[in-house]
Amino acid sequence: MKTVEDLEVKENLGMHLNYYQKEDQVLLAVDCIIFGFEKERLKILLIKRNFEPEKGKWSLIGGFLKKNEDLDQAADRVLETLTGLNDVYLEQLHTYSTIDRDPGQRTVSVAYFALIDVDSHRFDGIQIDAAHWFDIKDAPDLIFDHNEMVRKAKARLRRRALTKPIGFELLPEKFTMRQLQNLYESILDKKLDKRNFINKINSLDILVKLDEKDMSVSRKGAYLYIFDKDKYEKKVQEDGFSFKI
Image (cartoon, rainbow, N blue to C red):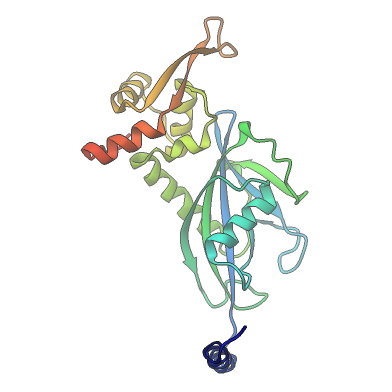
């Protein structure tokens, strides 16, 4: 049963809504830069637009904020619509508000970037036929300011990968040391000395070496490792451990 106070709050809210309706109406969107790692290469997931403006051109996946969700929820929804996944690393990147950034209508966009291990997911939930993975170095030119979004996301990913263990979000649960090095070389866009890299990773003491081997790489095979997230978090809490590559 509604009280008098409830009715007064609703009436006051309605007055404010009427007031705001006199203001300029601007659309708020989210755009997702989706990074994946597959076959030793860093990749990005793009779609070919099937509507105007810029129909037929390559784009990031995006959507408009709905009244019943916040920005993080909107980004989760957009990501799940494209990939069928709802439990991946997702980080807010930057807000883009140039007046003429979208020729369709004045739109402010909040960009997010996501990290996905491509090999461990079949992406059965993909609902957009025009979605395609591109090697990050071979990605096509994108619409609007999406190229700028990708450049900023790549720079953020490199900074994060050097100071936090987010790179493991791009790997399967079990991985070889070579896979890990290939990942960091792809993110940093440079070759790394194998011995120095292995020594640095081992010094962090956050991996568990398994008795299992990946026999597809050589006759002897390569030992598999897993990232010990609990051990990493405990080290951070107890002694101020700093992850640095």
